[in-house]
Image (tube, rainbow, N blue to C red; front, side, top):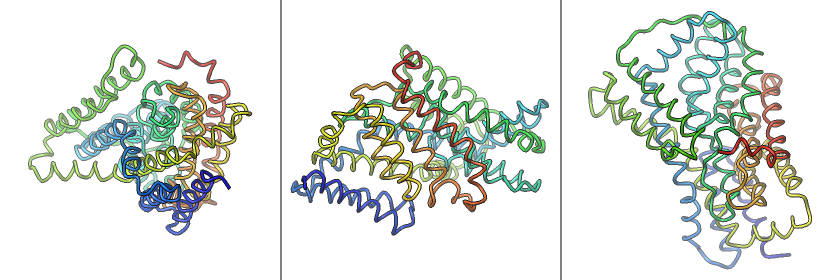
Length: 417
């Protein structure tokens, strides 16, 4: 048996075994990914290669700084009352369909900014869920979970796409840029359809009324941030704002200064720490995955993969790995599928078509919605049998759009900025 194959099997077995032993607890996934990376270098006879284990995470550093800054911004906006004020304005919209769209967008907004679902589940999603449950709506957790899922796929930040971008750059990651329009194309059909499916429920939410100077200032900052995000996303070839990291960081500082809720250093540190801690697990998983990928490249696993796929269509290879990732992810959650998706986009090479990379990445977002353990639904305290029929439509639409982007991405260069 080839040494590279033995290395791959050992690394996979450690990661999958860890998922089974910990019931897909994401916090433990980080540890087992690092252990698998260490074991891979040892099995390959290369000893403990700290360079590659540390170098892998650094490939994601720029993107994770943006995620971290966005998480702090969401935390200070939430504490300032900006989200409650935003909801109060949305709730006064009279046109039912528009109101439903805006409320679903409201749920998705924190996850759009940060790239991970927990951000919405604990802020805007919690607010909407409480209101829906107060009205006796049994589907409240499902609606919130789907909103958070769609938020992960909507720009500017999308951790699944950030992960997939790594594979597009061979050993070094392709910069996470140019994904704004492809992500919109992937997520908007599901967003529109789901908002229409649930518009009666979403439009029935009760009105709220809130007037607060501090929250108004914070909401104004959020509006400016959204404009800056759109400019950076759509016109990134002409206007560079540092991948939004600087925008999010400055915006968080402005909210802290303008909001009257922050009268002490302790309260300020509390809210900043809250934002940082919410981002710790998603960031740690990405960093651990970076080590896993780097060691697999160093030990020849990526070269073996290249040899295997030489005789096959690149598109077919991507679709097969997407399907395998979805099946494995259903049972074992994110770590191994995240690794496979980086290999799915690997054949298209350096500075690859971001449309195709986006198409491959949707599988990771869908796994977070449908995985048997440790996903969005379990975190919402839901039984799978009660929710699968409610989530199948948005999940299916996202997967269909992902496949279309993979198959026809070369003809969609108009989406690349």
